[in-house]
Image 1 (cartoon, rainbow, N blue to C red):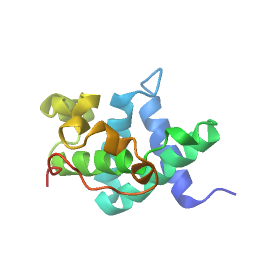
Image 2 (image 1 turned 45 degrees about the vertical axis):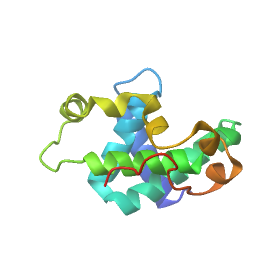
Image 3 (image 1 turned 90 degrees about the vertical axis):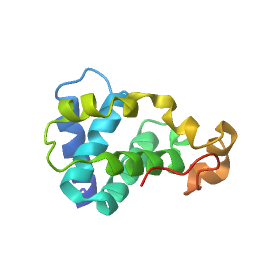
Image 4 (image 1 turned 30 degrees about the horizontal axis):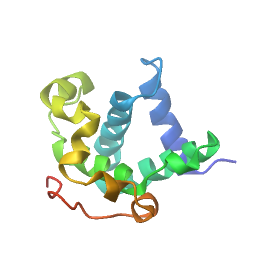
Length: 132
């Protein structure tokens, strides 16, 4: 039997992937946007980080999971949520900067994000604070 959180993550993932042929950065942002809008930032953080970590383990690449990167993206997307925007494409057009995968480089040194500490837990930005 699956856990409710896994079911929630899997349902959001299926919704995102219904209109995509691969899971790239745009789909990651879309998944996060859906989770934050439906669950709020705190519950979305847990759902997204647990789901991505579980997916990486299942795919046989647990080393690809980075707790700081995952949490930072949830925080950034949550900061940009506008309750009147209920269409992801409109959100994407309005906040196009979120689709630059290098956005975290404005907030973190690459060595910080590559550290073991960042991979297993939250590390505060060392270049500039995250928005919000």
